[in-house]
Picture (tube, rainbow, N blue to C red):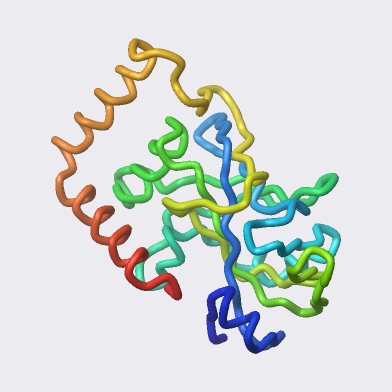
Length: 211
């Protein structure tokens, strides 16, 4: 499978390539798991819409990995324990790796639950699509989900992190923000190598958007 960016797909539409769409997320978590809305029928910044009833999920369910920033060279940071459609949205419940197994995955999970990371991106193969001249974007009528990732930079306004106990909403005061900031500083002090890796991956992702 060859991956292309949105501009390349527009210049040469094909159902033999993979493309990625980013979504902004709100988080809810419970019993160590997090629930995301990973896609919706809202038009994204390119004017494209992915039909929720057109998602093909069988291939993904056979290997339900969740990556960091589409980095296929690194171990997955989580696994999807459930994926389903409801209304005009595609949802997924995921479980991040335990700290003793993969500290980087556990750290990304902590950042998601605390609201420091709120972006997800779906990687899919467009099976059937049509150009919408009124909206100047594509309608993806049938799409095969290949993977999805937690990402630092989101795009679609309607992908929501939905799951539980801790709220991931932005702090309303300096006082409420302080515990989260202290936790991040403490994590940096204890896990320099993990944070350096995170910074490296973010920089590489920004330098090469096709990853």
